[in-house]
Length: 167
Image (cartoon, rainbow, N blue to C red):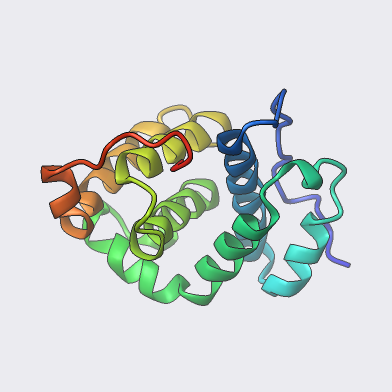
């Protein structure tokens, strides 16, 4: 089993009863797994199994967590290629936390079209505020806004009706 000493701890959020909160917890767990993958080079299966052992995993949306973790790691090279033109430095120079958040947000924009891009960006900002550097959320917001303009241009021009279950 891999060491978790280099992995930022997942903060427990009170009241994971709502669908959105379950999704947020899934994103937090996926963030931890993607961070661990970047830092240690572990494989997705082992990381996923390790994270499923945390005491509050049952409060997360398990299938969504698995989709995020597996999907981001499977498509990481393509996602990084899509992110890079919108950065002011090489992707390897980003902090692993901000990079992980950008990978999650980009994955959701590309592979989860049912989730409105504004919800994706807002969730990424919240992750960056909780786990990123001091102004990391501003950087994440700027990069994902630029990506949304390219990946979700039609949606931005004609936003979908609000759906509580989207985020």
